[in-house]
Length: 190
Image 1 (cartoon, rainbow, N blue to C red):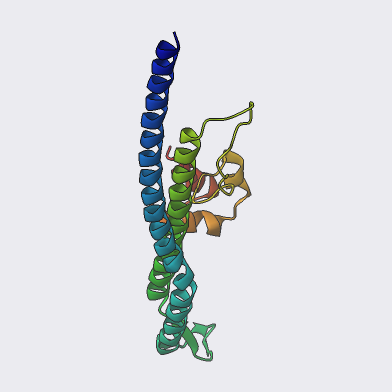
Image 2 (cartoon, one colour):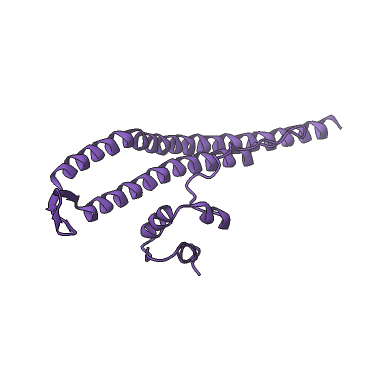
């Protein structure tokens, strides 16, 4: 009887050692994947940290170009009277520069969102492996509200000015002429 009980205990001990070895192997895999995720997160953070310096340098360079872009001076006549010369700026180049700056700022938010999603995926993977004890549930960290989304409700378009609506249309490459209702319809895709 004792020998049978001893054999049972040895068998259960062997099973526990096997499951312990499997858990240790899985833990080693998780540590390796966690280290890889940390490296990716650090790369994203370094890129995001250097972004403001890069943007300010570009803005300064573009401001230097704007001074050089004073292209034409025009004398206008009104009722037969000559007026002072008015300087006109090359607005086409300026609008292109604004579009590139706005697209770069969207790219920077992509880096931040990617780092958050990588971190969330790692946390969710760890939470799925750790069994919840005593009815306690663990939650992964929450992302900030509205990060990287450009969705707007129908009412918010009505509150926007025509200039802002035209800017949104220009970003999307759509026609910017027309009344406010027409601009809103284009933004909604009707």
